[in-house]
Length: 226
Image (cartoon, rainbow, N blue to C red; front, side, top):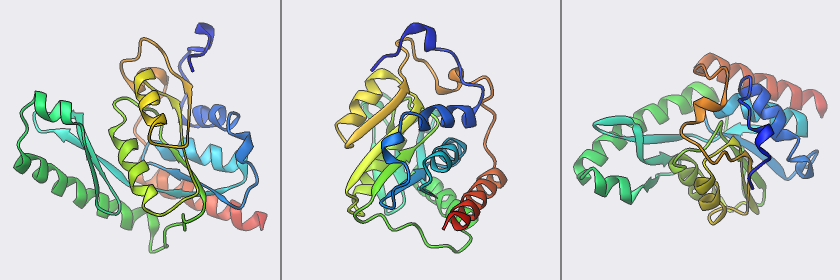
């Protein structure tokens, strides 16, 4: 799974990372039974490049990290559309986080998940996933809590296959995801992994406007190709 050391250079940005990842997913090109699902917001620019290169449908799948109350950047779990909640039992135990605190964080994140659902979909229905090959895309994997929640939530829609695809990820996390999904494509799995952002020269925040723009461009491209 680990690439040669000389390939372990930061990506210029998420779009460049998506182009690299697309080159590793050629088996899924030009298929009507494939849909690329981006995890907003950072996963959308990556997924846009993949879906465009492969000539397949792009949609989003909403997941929100549950941050430790005292350290919001540290994930203790995640929630996803469909009411799925995944917790990292080790983190919860280590920090002594009580159920009430978890519920409070989850309610707050659910509010943001619902807002993004409205903002990004603009009233459009989610892509049908039953019987489809679903490629779940994010800009990287650290603890993997968010992606684990996404995989479990997508499974509830009865897809034929779930593929996790990321440009960079912690080796142990990529291996753990392999047990939950049908295939994992981690383009880079650096042994000395500390944070996703360190593997991008430009890791500026993806905005809501960019998400909407890329989704609209993808829909326009798909309509033109029909």
